[in-house]
Length: 165
Image 1 (cartoon, rainbow, N blue to C red):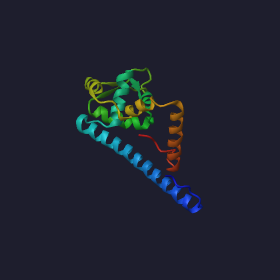
Image 2 (cartoon, rainbow, N blue to C red):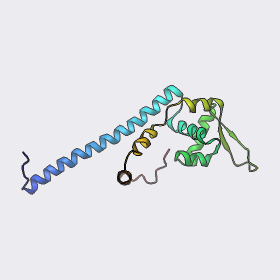
Image 3 (cartoon, rainbow, N blue to C red):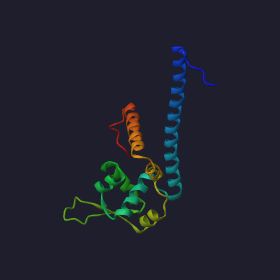
Image 4 (cartoon, rainbow, N blue to C red):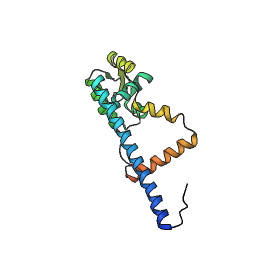
C-alpha cells in the first residue's frame, strides 16, 4: 500500500533520497565506463602491444587506405597533434610508415606496413564500437537525450576545452 505524502519535509526527504540514489547510480555507471576503457586498453597492450588509440589509427588506415595526419585525426576524432605521437609509436613498432608522395614535401601520408595490416585484420573491434552498436538501437529522441545529458555532465566538469586523446 502506498502512503500519501502530506508533509513537505517528508516529501523533501523522500525525493532527496531518490535523487541521492540516482546520483550514486550515475557516478557508478561513469566509473564502470572508465574502468571498461582502461581494461580494454590493458588487454590490447598485453595481447597486441598497442593502445586503443593506436588500434583506432590502424583501423582507420585499414578501412580507408593511406591517409594524411589530419585525415586520420578526423577519422578517429582527435587533434592532429595527438595523431603525430600515435604515428611515432606505431612507426617504431613497424606497423605504419610515413611517405612523402606529394610534390609538396610537407605533406606526409601514412600507410600500413604488412605487419600493421595483419594486426588491423586480427585485432578486436575498438571498445567504442560496442557503444556505437548499442546507440544505433536507440530512437532519435533517446540519442538526443543521451547527448544532451552527456554535454551537461562534461560542462559540470568544465572540460569543454580538454583535448580528446
